[in-house]
Length: 137
Image 1 (spheres, rainbow, N blue to C red):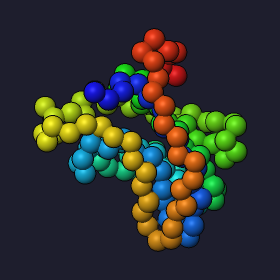
Image 2 (cartoon, rainbow, N blue to C red; image 1 turned 90 degrees about the horizontal axis):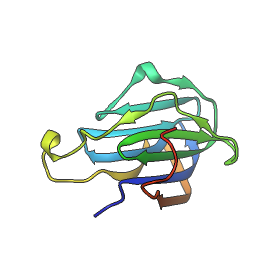
Image 3 (cartoon, helix red, strand yellow; image 1 turned 180 degrees about the vertical axis):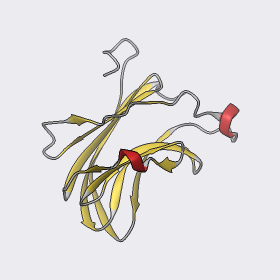
Image 4 (cartoon, one colour; image 1 turned 45 degrees about the vertical axis):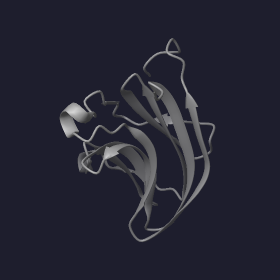
């Protein structure tokens, strides 16, 4: 049985016009995530980009962190690994399961790269969060 609450982070060097980020992936129709390209930040939910959530965020290096606390997902991003900004949209993912999408799969942490260019991935980390730890923010 997997962890019900966990946190994962990764450092991404963005090259060319490529976009990279972290996702919680059930299947190609069902995932949520946040990522960056050299000029903007992108948000995904229910397998689609939420273009209304795009933010101008010029950067070539970004650290992205996803926290899933009992199906409430929060993304953070940082340019220096010390100062973090919370993504403005938390996502509730308890509906990302086989009764809705079939397949008897599970929600998995993934790293993605899309577009022209390349992404260098460094410093991936994952840790389980004990059930009684902290709040939802």
